[in-house]
Each structure stands twice: as C-alpha cells, then as structure tokens.
Image (cartoon, rainbow, N blue to C red; front, side, top):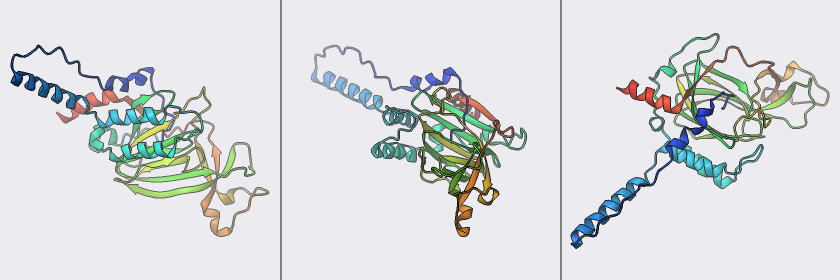
Length: 291
C-alpha cells in the first residue's frame, strides 16, 4: 500500500521507545539459609521470564530490522527472510495493534469524492517503514506505484477490493507518461486472509484499494518511499487496452481485458485525503476510547 504518506521526524523514534529493556537485577545479599537462596533464585527466574516477553508490535519491528538490514532500492530480501516476516504478520491480530471497526477512524468523513483515510504511523527509517491504513466504507486509495520496493500488506479486518498491475517490460509506449501494464489482481478480499507481498517488478507493484466495509491494513515497506533516493510515489489513471493503438503492441482479443494503459497523473488526486497519526498518540486515544 504505502501511498506516499508524509510523516514527521518524531515518528522515526516512536518504536525505538518500545525496545525491550533488560531488567536490572540488583545484588542479592548472601543468605544464611539454603531456603532463602532458593527463593532468591526463583525470583530472578521469574524476572528473567518476564523480560523475554515482547509485544507483537515489538516483534514485528525486531523482525523488520533483520529482514531489511541491507535494504536498498530494488533489492529483494531472501526467501528465508520473506517467509520469516510473512509468518510474523500472519499472526498479528487487530487487537494486537489496538484497532477496531468501531473507532472514529472508520467513520466516513467526506472531504470531496472519497472519505478521509487515516494513516497510523508506527515507524520509519531509511531501510523500512511500518504503518496502518484505516479506511471507512467506500474509501479509496487511488492507483499508485511502489518503485524499487518490496511491500508486505496484511488486511486486519474488513472487505476490500484490490486491483493491481505489473509493468510490461520493454513495451512500446503511446507517450512518455503512458505505459502498458498487465493486470495481476482484480478481486475482493475479506479478513482473515494471508499477507500479500508485492515486489519491484512482480506481484502487483501498482495497486488501488477500495474499502467495501470498514478496513484496516498493516503495511511494511522496504525500503520506504524517498524522493532523494528516487523512490517517488506516482499516481495513475488506467485506461482499457483498446484506448491506444501502438505499433508493435498486439494482444489477442480474448486477453485484452488483462491489460491496461497506465498514464501518470500530474498531481496527487484531489479526492484522496490522508490524515496521519502517530502510533503513540493512537495508543493514548485508544485508552480514552475504551474507558
């Protein structure tokens, strides 16, 4: 997903505050009895057991640090690392993140042609980013790309229509801002479902989301969008294959619906409005909401 959201510098430090801290166990006085020493050891063991318990969000962060340790534009993690991160995401539930369809984020607030979308920012650095998109019913995240990126998306709850494309390599173009793409997905998905993964050149790198019900999507991008690094978020119009006739491009009649021409939009869609909230602020709001 990762639709080019803008976050503050403060967000980069959010999850570092969640890092597991080792318990500092003070010096235990020498006991005169074996029973006292035994009790002390039991207390230390109990403390040690508590210290290794980490939250699902912290586990996700720790896993991302490993998987994207060497993240660079166009570099796809190893299959072993992909499987490891996907397994962590598959286990995460909405309650682990403190999101529920009854929260204010999922009430339609019309700001033009599409309801307001909320992005809960969890963490961002030059190697990866983590966040949650909250979509009220009928909200749309317009067709956009993920250049040189590997993206993991987990639908936490709700029903969503996803339409995605991959570029057709080396295809002639009708213009410099219009390219041929092959349809990858055009279906509805209802949680719970498997984590989806898109790659720099495969898996549906360009996609559009439409919420059929209130939806929450957990997104991990590696590496994230970065204008200085050339990873710009670009939005597109999609046109049927028959819209343009280009020399050297031929598709069988029965396969034409599986292709489209994607034309770059000059500006970000006016109908698409995103409100960004920091995860720590969301947690405070969630406490107040549940009281």
